[in-house]
Image 1 (cartoon, one colour):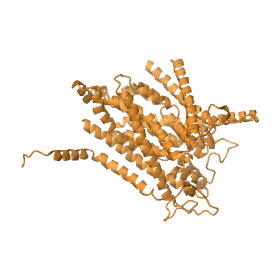
Image 2 (image 1 turned 90 degrees about the horizontal axis):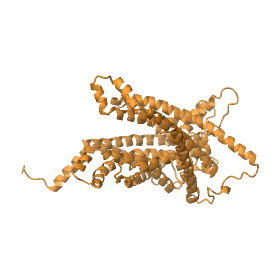
Image 3 (image 1 turned 30 degrees about the vertical axis):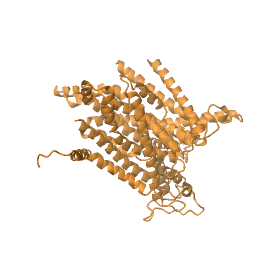
Image 4 (image 1 turned 60 degrees about the vertical axis):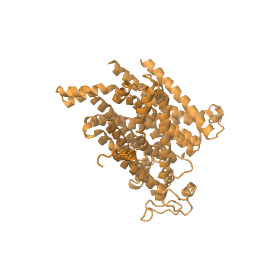
Length: 293
Length: 282
């Protein structure tokens, strides 16, 4: 009984448990991140309001200052501002998450065009091209394209993804370069593995493992950008904290809470995501170091 | 070397201008469905009626906006460089205690606040607590020292500066920490050199070219941030003109604003390259 050879499924289960234990910090932090995102979306459904309903002010405004019932007060049409800010942040999160995922994917594809080239200066063209685009501020590029297209959601997401791709590609290229300098890679060369096998089987996997951390750290920044774009009136027909603040900006004497509270909501949510994103990113990197050692 | 770098800077500016023209065409005609092409002269404002007055006003408008934005930029960029470099070096000195995260934490937390909302919150505070107009275009000083314009510029500069400073501290500290992790540092330590001597006499000195390379890295971000904070605070700068141009589809304002920003970035990049070249020579 004591010397029984373990079955394949038993071995697989043990390995899976060991892997989960190794990833415990990453999983814990990632689940907190997802819980926060889940909380945002739990209030986003069935709000049943069009932006035009929110921004209309009747002759006798129905707004109320913040109280126990309405924490953030109400709008000119009597809508709860906390609920609207909640919906707004969920919208910003969804736009940011899609753009970040697309941007990371595009950056990986772009780097993959150069990575199999054996030359020493293989990333030179990529780095120069990305640096040249950086002469114009990314926000200016985004404003021109989003403003020109009337703030279409798909345009905002695609432009954000392209900007993320252009800024991330040199970083990913650097990771590939660093990855190829490791002792394990040198050992693989000594064992006779081809460059293609090493890059695909070893270096790429190391780089890809960093992407969840990058995604988690990117989303809060993109949420801020999306909020800023909506504030400028280039976020299209969506309720976001940016558009709520822009709406409140015109009423700061009569109803200052309308500009103030959506901003507090945005700050708190972005701060929470930034902190968790940074921790997830760090944990993912630390896990890599442990694996390497 | 300087002439060579200058030529590269001019080429870069040309590329940026061409890219901007392409962006306007794609944004307005391809995506927005407008029928005014960017190369078509009739797409620009009609200056035929009272041309002189319009052109003079247009030039004055841009001159005044440039002055306003340069003041904001000087505060934000100067502050980010000054605090970023000094605190970054300090953070690298405290690397064993996580100085990089400790010193940049307050700036990173501030960076989570939407900058445009910060400007509006200052205006609201100004209305209700100080009983005075809050936005930049509410009040004009016509006699005595114009402290108000400095205050307005500081409100626009502060949120942009905070985020850039946090990034600068981390970047400076990372460069120094990377250098401090090299084997020769341990060798010097075992030879009996003091920690301070090793850091300032060797690590810092050897990292100077890499540190200089970080000079202009926050500038595009700062300019991008200033664009919408100016709009939010109703500050009469380039950013406000640019956003108004985009909202109303005024091509000349968009192109002028974009080229103005590209010129600032190109000048900063040119300065960085010249300084890096001189350091390399020495």
